[in-house]
Image 1 (cartoon, rainbow, N blue to C red):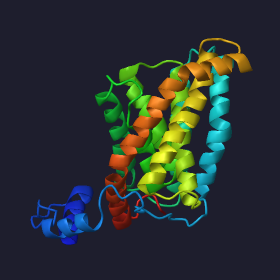
Image 2 (tube, rainbow, N blue to C red; image 1 turned 180 degrees about the vertical axis):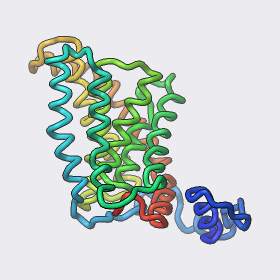
Image 3 (cartoon, helix red, strand yellow; image 1 turned 90 degrees about the horizontal axis):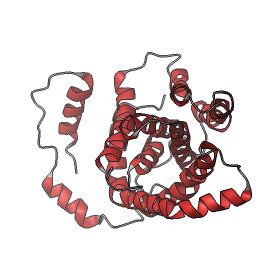
Image 4 (tube, helix red, strand yellow; image 1 turned 120 degrees about the vertical axis):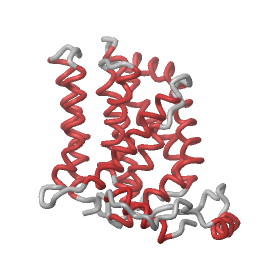
Length: 289
């Protein structure tokens, strides 16, 4: 267990830029940590790691995010495909990134934003980019979807969508930009949006087992369900039931691998990540006002 006084001192110094010579670099109380480990084993899949903040109600930002995802962003992608010949993919990607940030602009309309309210979102996106880059040699075995789901559970659907979209745009600077980038941003963002909505409505618990099942299904049916027909569009094939069936069957091994990898990352990483995010969020009230 973390020593509260030491953590408070460290976070104040780190986030507020203050010097605090009393901060102890050894934050972990080993005796208390051992008792906690004996009490709750890390393989316990029934431990709830977080609770819904809005208790079943969607915030204004969440409703706006749903509108952007279900209407404005698909229309933007359709406009780029049909009227820009799918050649202005960077312009469309930047437009999607701007649309993803609109809920945050609205949240900051009546108050002055603080850097620490945005730094955690940037850190989560950077972790997703770094994870995708480090595991570049393993096709479809990336932690991006897992990090997006964890972010959505802790900070809401709009944060999950933003992290997913920005992570795919930024990581493609290394993996290669193309007409697939807007589709990847949209697909990964939808995973975060759905995860955040299900959690806020109380339809999904943040325990290890539930997150692993959702991560697997989301990677297979949401990400794969969007990227497979997108491949037909990018290859200029006719979008009909025969071509859709063929592309889904050919992409099934990739989707299953992606789903299994996402579930594995969530199994080992969801609990410690959510614990840390909840600790910081509770202390500073991040993204909640």
